[in-house]
Image (cartoon, rainbow, N blue to C red; front, side, top):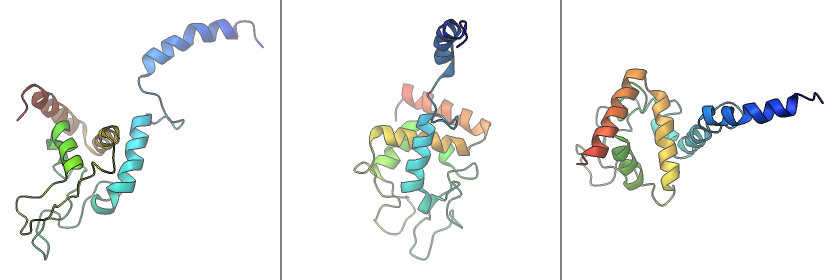
Length: 149
């Protein structure tokens, strides 16, 4: 073994760890993002689409008078909600105010997902958005953190 390799590793490794941010899963994808994707695929994709595309005609009531699952990509409105609101919707479920039935439009996942799981899904959703949408959503999240409604 090269006599310079060990000292070089000892010198460079701490800097790489500090500069690297999140640990990755071996594919170069941050662990939280990979976990969020896996959870999204397991619990969300069947309704909201594998690429966050949502249901067809998601902005029109279906035959039961309920709003179909919206897209989470840049064509939808998910990016307009703060992290806290998204967390609440995922954990507690959501009933669209225009639904004609009393049932939840989206079921509550607090019994199936941990708080960390929900945060990972929210971080994964952000990968569907354009830069301007991510900046808007980040601003909305910071604003809501300071002034909760």
